[in-house]
Image (cartoon, rainbow, N blue to C red):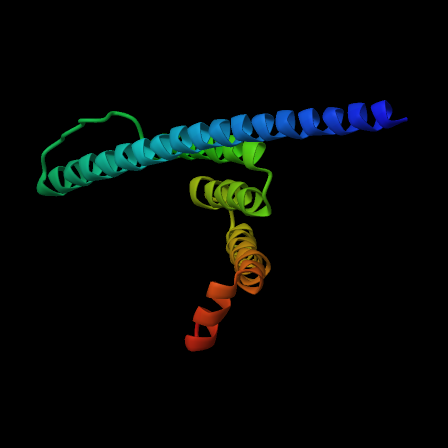
Length: 164
């Protein structure tokens, strides 16, 4: 009987050690994926900023009477492709993080893309804006407020700054 108990204890100890190793590998993979998605987001942001600057120069040249086409594509097509890539990056984050915050972020980007890129009637625009506002409210009240309740430091900050 004593041998069975020792074998059981050893088995559980090894299982716990393997779970720790798997957890560390999972955390390392999440860290690497976080860095990759962060750099993609920064790259997309810089690319969109450069395109906006170039399109601004084209607009100023067009107003001045010069026909200048540095980027021949329409801005809406560029923005649509950029939104699709950003949604893909956010979707990737959602797949490996499994948090409500990432799900809300994907929905925010998808609704923003639909609202900004596809110019439909005013009712659709209003529904998109209300949906984005609702998602921001849900993100604030259900995610950030819940984390403040769990985190004692955040509770103290919230007590000192009630307007937050």
